[in-house]
Image (cartoon, rainbow, N blue to C red; front, side):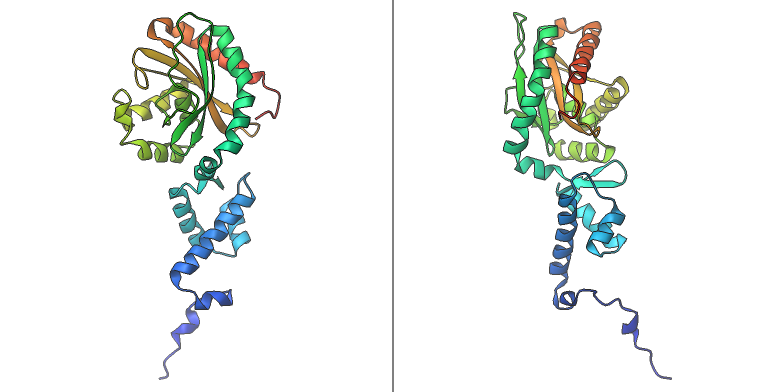
Length: 268
């Protein structure tokens, strides 16, 4: 019997250049193809779209996406869409944050004027929150828990917790895992406690957190969404524990909701 040439069952590279590439170079080139396609369509691409754009099959596309997500280069929006990841936002803070700060300043002013306490706005940078704006209120005692420019683990403050809770479950898991070692420094916060706070925030529709980022202080927060419904920032109001009974927490949450609703359509 004549032996059959088994090489005929091996898929040959579509690109002649692949035949001379080592496996590492080929993987890198394909990963960059995926990244280029995602960056060109920031509104999001499905896996089937990425297959068409790169000429790759589903299995390698999924493998490459997993690596890119792990590095923060790509993020998942909902169940099916892949978008540029948090690393890209962190590399361009000077472009995004001043605009967001300007857009949210009227919101902070309105909230602070209504309640008399200091209001804050944060954005996400990877697993961290970054304070981009602050409005001092009129009450004699102001609790200025963070300054503009302060960075801390996403979720240990009210604005960051509201933004964290608005993210998809996979991103919540990634953020908590990335911050696990730092969390105990914030009032003994733990990953388990933070997950409980995320669930409570989702059920309530706004966040409340006390005695973690700053002792004897309680803050209320709310996620800020753009015209597509994506959570892009968080706002919060902080005051002393004595000044924050449940009824007032609800009042401040209502103030935040009204101030965000007053933004012109498509402002963010």
